Image (tube, rainbow, N blue to C red; front, side, top):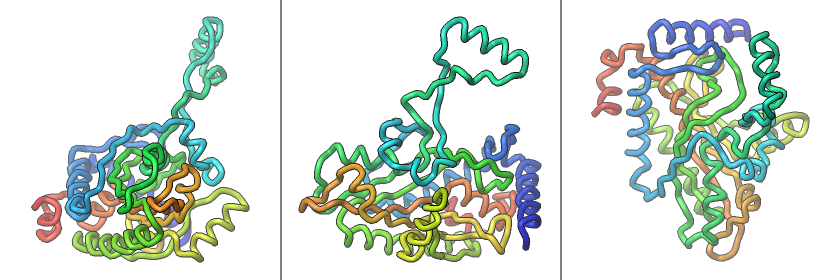
Length: 308
């Protein structure tokens, strides 16, 4: 399937979802409302994740979809993904500038000249507020830390692909500790993730992957990430069997965030981190793709897993 066919398949599935009332268009590619049925599936899957990971003793943290701008700058996100970042601006002009704004707005011209950056940015990944939060507490306990986080996230990727939304939800378990603790966590969730998603009766595969780093230097980072097998994704066909969609990701950051935020283990070493991320909308879209839009008609085995 070539890119033209893939694009057509993406648009067709989006239109089917809209016609079924599951997604509500807003006039911007990648920005949708969700129906009650869609939300119910997301909530059921969220509960399934908790059943698989909730007994591990993770500390629960919930953050808004906006991040302290200072934390964002310290994260070095702009070095790797400037094309995905979303900043929040607000009017910073005087009364004269306000009159100009209103005139330009009425005339259909650009009115954003006096918008200035605020102290918050859109959260690009649910785990980002966790690291500075943990760093402020001082050295980790001997057993390290396990965090359960859930947040809306933003990435500036306008697309007709319904599985590539600009605002989407991400559930994560984040492990912070020694290299051995972190690697053990990721291996555990590689097995769990495959088994958990297999219980939902969808075709899937787990493969090594890389992040979409920006620019020429980004290509080298992507190659290094793949060579070291730092990122795996659980892939499910949604709009194309030839180009399946990453619905879960398993990431080992090594000591990157430990160095950035000065997080140390109990013995004084720089902490390593890893996370498993669940793309909530993508999983729901995969379920609708493979089991149909009527959840009451889904296979009994899948309904038992999600609804009990």
